[in-house]
Amino acid sequence: MSEISKLATAFEERSKERAESTEKAVVSAFEKHESALLSALSESEQRTKNAIRAQSQNLERIALRSWMAVAIPVIVTLLLSAGAIWALGWHIKNQVDTIIQQNATISRLSEQGGDINLTTCGDNRRLCAEIDDPSRDAKGYGENGQYRILKGY
Image 1: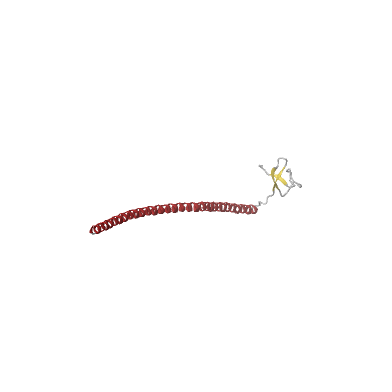
Image 2: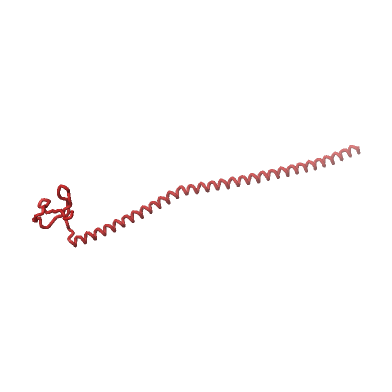
């Protein structure tokens, strides 16, 4: 029986050695697999981060375009409105200045006898003025002959 016992002991030792070598092979394979999984996860994480960064930049560009699509027409409208208001103010100021000048001219003419009544006379529709004394010999126009054509006209 000693032979059987030797065989059993040898078998047991070989089994232990095989178990240890199998365990080492499994651990080694598991470590390789774990390393490959970690590497794949790291690459996947990096791709995901890059995709998120790219999408974020894309969204920022789209948001900027959206704001520009709103802001540019608003700014242009405000600038055009300001320009129109300025132009109208300038035109009104010039018109007011002209009216002031014309009123001053009218006042000055009235003071200098400028209350002349002008009309058109004759077949040629010439400019003529009302006179104080229609009894003179010159040809007169109007109901009472009170209009005369001005000299030099």
